[in-house]
Length: 427
Image 1 (cartoon, rainbow, N blue to C red):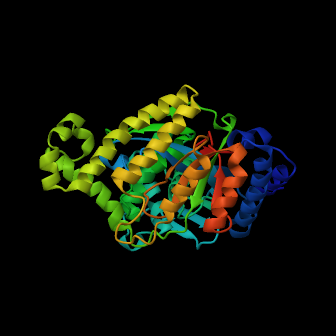
Image 2: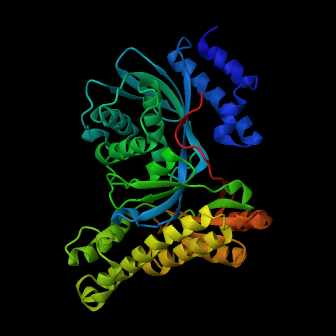
Image 3: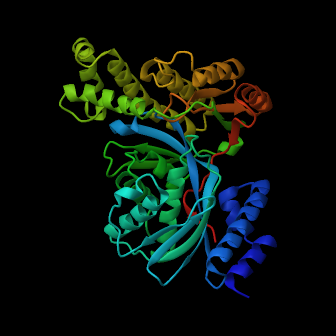
């Protein structure tokens, strides 16, 4: 009996309960994951055969909790890993080639003797595979050929960072197959960001990859982006009596690249008045002392976005402290404040040039009506379209889901939980 067939039988027979519980927590979720891994192993056997020593891996999506549009100006963020993840079955090969077949996509193939950036691969998953391998190699870690099948239930386009989960998954595979698991979670996140920036062609920050790689609630200070200060925040979300909901408002992100870039650029335009590259390098007092001049030179919206940065950067500290003390009620107040600041000052909830289309605004309005005094709500991720985040008291959960689905369509409201584990080898 091959290792792969033996593993499939053991999973079907209920083995590895503790290993799965460490990642997936609940009995019902473990049952669902067993079926996912069995399907994944079937795909591996069909593509690569059964005569290989297989290992199983997982990397979660993430949600931004506080720190909206702060990381790109070297600010602080509070993020968390979620229970949706990308999973992989992987095995070494002796061909110096990496082959990754993701469910629903064509196979990505990278020959390890050529890890240069390939411009024609921009915005394709093969670029991420090549970039992660190159990132390991450039840091002096081992790389080697492997075959893998992957699957993901991280919702694409939801602001939950399906791309970061995939990148961290690849890094976790290389870490355990060839480096004895010695590469830190933070380094894997940095390598993943490098792959997305340099190979995939997307200038993302480091928040998404760090939250996925480290797991749980994570406070990150990007004052020095090359050496971010990362602190896990100890809080048992499963015991707080609330659900984490992400509502897809069905607004399109198409054509919004310029809007997202403008947030960063306008904050940086304020910093440039002080001969600095980011707002984090400009003391708030210095900023406030030049408000009249700044309004003339960079405009009112840039000034308001700078106000948002300063208050949001401090708010991350307060929200993290509230969680670490177990004060969830206080934490919710800071989540609401974060959302209000994004709405009024950062102005990334709707497009002023398209006033008739405000799906995120409507979702926030409905959430306030339903949850005021019992929950919290805010724009999620980049904003302008897409999703909102809500912490919903369990007594109100079904009513909240029904209300959101009635307005935005069936299954628009996703109920999530916070996952303690980051990128891991499961078996």
